[in-house]
Length: 486
Image (cartoon, rainbow, N blue to C red; front, side, top):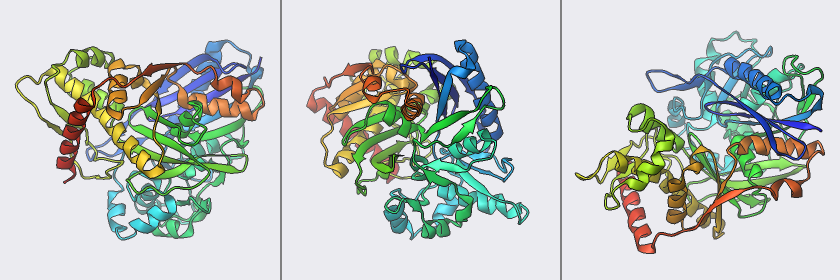
């Protein structure tokens, strides 16, 4: 039997998942990495640690599965998006990676005010410090300016960094999904854009070659762990990989990934659509010479809200407690949380917004605050879904969900109620690794598409909240958002 490796390099750590010839998970290994957060709130990762953890996770997955190394036929990679890295020709990182959550490049964005229209028109993305263009500009100012003039720069996202390190001949490539999120890529010409790169001050020669997501990107033996090199047959941003893994391959299909933050993504087919409601237009993937577009809304704090409850407030000892607490909360309590801890992203794009807990009464206690935190996740996703319907003209019938928080039955029912849509929660958490591995296996000729996606298992939720209650709750949410965005 042949096996496929899926590597998901995410914000909190690295997963390596081994799949058998039928696309079933054989073994999974997880290795966390350190979150470097300084007094200014800057969030960084050590690129070298991430690379070492990829090698370690692969070894753990293969050895844990007790399969023969020669049975592994290929590997697919999904990655945390927007996190931005800089390295030299020899593959040495020149700085810690700037994580997607980090807003240190806000100074760059303020300097570029007046260019919002051009940036949005070409890149499909609102001008923001969230995206790599501004992060690269920050690195140019604060890191590159102190390097020797003959240093050969390599800017990229995590996928291109891992590819460069994993391949012995240092292949420097990325795929359409990751390129489309940099704010330097023209979504109509499908190429790095000279005007965008000039605006941010990024040398175009320092950017990777852009390829189809199901390309053969090169080969690797994972630092000699495998006896023979195997091909890297797919690379995609993690949310795009989850869209593929969810089987959202047709126009109008939508998924939401609930991780540290959330990505809500709608497949809009082969025709570019410019959002007029605060969303980003991006590329889902490029395959076999054709690209597929998406509308996307990114949310900074979803799963991270639960972490806040646990680590900062001490209201829970583990995320698993939130479901029972929310269900036990006083139904009459009207407490609302807007988790704008680092501003609000889609569809508001208010980076200076501050978090707000309002509507409290004497009945507001631990359970009510926990419930408000869970509700805030569902409210934010609902905002994005409403914007998607307006932009696309599609009436949403089903939302496919994935990620750890989707195991919370209260949250998924509330999501169904607030958005007034059927919710299908995936039975597997590893949707990004699944998407990357399935695409790699299809490229290798090991899998058949019709076999893979017919087996997906979902827990389904149907709207049950009366319309009047839903409208009251949503109006309270919008009132609170209005306060923080004023």
